[in-house]
Amino acid sequence: MSLDIKICGLSTPETLGAAIAGGASHAGFIFFEKSPRNVTPEEAAPLAARARATGVAAVAVTVDADDDTLDTIVRMVRPDMLQLHGRESPQRIAAIKARHGLPVMKAFAIARRDDLKKLDACRGIADRFLLDAKPPTGSDLPGGNGVSFDWSLLASLDADTDYMLSGGLDAGNVGEALGIANPPGIDVSSGVESAPGIKDTALIEAFFLAVADACEQRKTAALGV
Image (cartoon, rainbow, N blue to C red):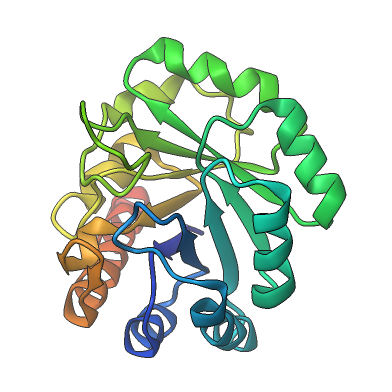
C-alpha cells in the first residue's frame, strides 16, 4: 500500500527528525497565531530546508491568510505546498496558486455525507484535499482538535479523489481508519503529542509502527496468507 504520511504542527529539530526517520512524506508547519503549534517563518525556515533536503515535502499551513502573510511565508520558508485550512473560496485558491506557483491542499471539515459535496467546487482547482473533522463547538482551531469523524462516509468519494485523511488519528486507531477509508494519505497532529502543541518523538515512532503494522496486515490478508 502506497501511503503518504504527513506529520503536521512540527516545530523542533528533534520531532522533525523523528518524522523523517519514520518515513513521513510531508512535514507540516502551522502559521496561525491561535494554534499552540504556531511557528514563525523564521522558526520554520531551517526546519523546512532540512525536510526538503531529505526528500520530505514542506507544507505551509495557513488559515485565511492575506497576500502579505503568504508572500512572507513563501519567501522565507520556501514550502513545497500550501495548505489552506480556512474558508478560502475556489476563486481565492486559484488566485493563491497563480500568485505563488505552488500546489495547494484545501482542507474541509466533514461531519455528514453532504459535507463531501463541498469538494466539488474546488475540483480541478485544489491539487489535493485534506478531510478533517468539524471542530468542537467553541474551538478556535479549524484542525488539530483531536476529534474524528465517520470514516465510512468516504466510501462515497470518487475513486480518483486525491486526499489526506485527518482528524483524531493516533497509533491506536490509524489501522482502523486505513481499513475503513483506504485513503491515499493521512495527516496526524494532536495524535502524536504529549500536550497541545508538544510533539513527542516516542508517539511519532509509535504512529509509524502502527501504520506499518496495519499495512502489513492488509497485505497479508490480500495474499490470503
